[in-house]
Length: 221
Image (cartoon, rainbow, N blue to C red; front, side, top):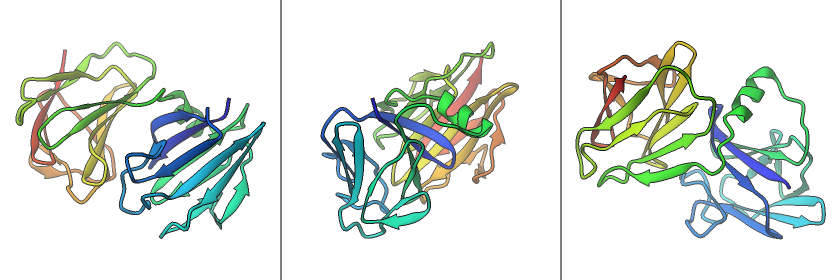
């Protein structure tokens, strides 16, 4: 069954199986694939499945729809094609595809629909991407807001925190620990009082993270 793997800056955030004849993509919450980013139109694109073929059609979006770097209006998708909408990349998978080691590692993160749950009155979301567990145990403890006291175990390869369109940071598990980096949004996350950029920063036990007005703490077992 065809599927779409959605990522941003190389971080896989969700996976969507194409089970319907028509699958819509856009910023509005009623779309089948919702990408809450201002660069994405409310009704951005349409995926039409007929038999074993899937066509992608741009719905007169403001910033356009790209396939493998080229702007398209309507195109038949091939296995391994990469769709670009705003800053997001969506890989179309319909069978085995040849990937680089880096791409294999991203697909390995396989996000069987990212699990999101409200973590504060600012609607800070935690989304975990399934992966292989590691001996190192760690979690994020919410210190402020209505979810103060909640603790989220970092058991997966990638955990994203924040709200699309406002601020998103990603915490990634590595062989020797965890790193955090800014993914998107005008509200830049803060680590121990210092702004976090796009370059990964190593997390240490007790580190304080500030995001969208919410204070959190990184804790290791």
